Image 1 (spheres, rainbow, N blue to C red):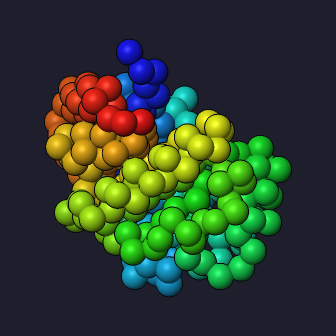
Image 2 (cartoon, rainbow, N blue to C red; image 1 turned 120 degrees about the horizontal axis):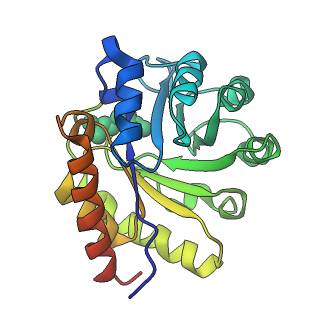
Amino acid sequence: MKQTKIQILPSLLAADVGRLADEVRRAGTAGADALHVDIMDAHFVPNLSFGPTVVSMAHAEVTLPMNVHLMMDNPENYAERFIKAGAHTLLIHAEIAGDRRALLRRIRGWGARAGITLNPETPLTAMDGLLEEVDEVLCMTVHPGYGGQSFIAEVLPKIAAARAAISASDRAVDLSVDGGITIETAAAAARAGANLLIAGTSLFGKSDMAAAVRAMRHVCEAAWQTSNV
Ligand code: DX5
Ligand code: ZN
């Protein structure tokens, strides 16, 4: 049996905002491995979502690690605040202007895991030279900005190429996918080499989130066994 490190991360964007603390606790008791929190600045993406206060609220409610996805043009202005708020992993986007290497190093220097995110059309070469600076590579499987979109299957070859690059590097880097992740698309992504599955609608949208997390983990572990990873 190949070793698996499949992790299931509910995305808070799909939670009932009127009951946000309850929803965070629901993810905590559902057997999730971490909580994904989307931060949108209305510039990098055409939407607004949460800020550092939501990360600190969630961090106070559950022991789950906070996986914080910065969809921001200037993440350097906020990175430290999100880490102080409790971010365990801070993901920036590869498409931003500015010195990404320096920021990834600062994120790690502040004690968090650092991650780099690629939009669906962004090639893997956009993170050339950055793999050694990160603990997680996130391949977006929708165009970021909104929940509830459909998985873009054309990203699968890039996921496989990212996994191959990670394996060749001999470093323990997680490979995550985000957007349109359902039980079916999660299995396809895991078969391509993803080990962190981020899902909003298909987990928070279920009345029994624990069953949905269990089912997703089960299909992904099976898919991982049949993959070339
Ligand atoms: C999209 C966000 C995702 C979002 C996914 O920009 O980055 O984390 O919550 O939502 P679903 O799983 O509904 O596609
Ligand atoms: Zn996200």
